Amino acid sequence: MEKLTKAEAGYILASGCELHCSECAFISSKGKCTDYVKSDEDVKPFGGCNDWKDLSKGRIEGNHDKTRIETGYVENKPGFGCRRCEELEAPDDCKRVDKRSPGATPGKIDPMGCCNLWEADPKRAKLTTPALIQLIAGGRKAHAVIRVKKQHSDGWNDA
Ligand code: SF4
Ligand code: SF4
Image (cartoon, rainbow, N blue to C red):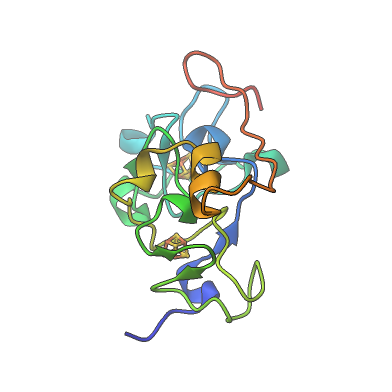
């Protein structure tokens, strides 16, 4: 099967987060998704979708016109990212996205990346990021420092 380019797949690098709704620029201070129509806006802190944008770059007021179905909304408490995707060919390739195509992380698919083709891996989707970095590195000490945002007990961040 011919692979998609990074651009076609919407591949991004999202270091330092789990790509959750609680870390998305479209989330309101009250935990509603402003990208979605009203009937879909009550998302979970541990949800995520293909419209995810990095909240650390600032909050965005969405147009309240998308739906969960059209944006591929899913929930996974540990998070998302290539490291939890069944298409990853560890340590740095993907079965469906061409790692040599132009885009983020030149020449590789990074475990801290993600794209619109994300599918939960039966084992890795349930693991924490530090455990995954260890696993993907083949048990060697992880060289990357992973900063995971501190969350309130209800799962929402301060940002
Ligand atoms: S549902 Fe999608 S757009 Fe809305 S807050 Fe979550 S990741 Fe962001
Ligand atoms: S491993 Fe999954 S999320 Fe990452 S680029 Fe490949 S298909 Fe997309």
